[in-house]
Length: 109
Image (tube, rainbow, N blue to C red):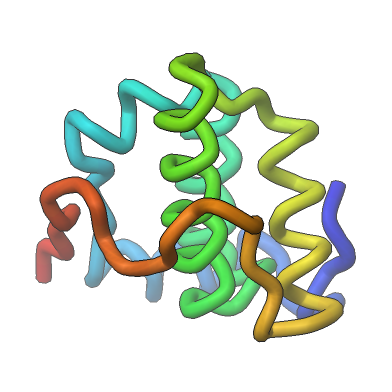
């Protein structure tokens, strides 16, 4: 589990509020993210346990890493990326450009 950005929010009303805006993972993102990792991403977005900008950066870094190693990124590795980004927002995995090398995902309002 990554370090929690917020400890005072649970599933209560936050989940209802967050359903107004949903994030859909693109096919290219899903290809490089294990199913358990995808579930964690959706949970982080729904509960705002991790700030959205950190979650987005972690998705980009994980997808880049997955593409480099040509396999899906598992949940523990994704959590390590989130922790690194929470500790230092300038964190970037060497050799993985942070610019999007895959089509962007979409937000549905």
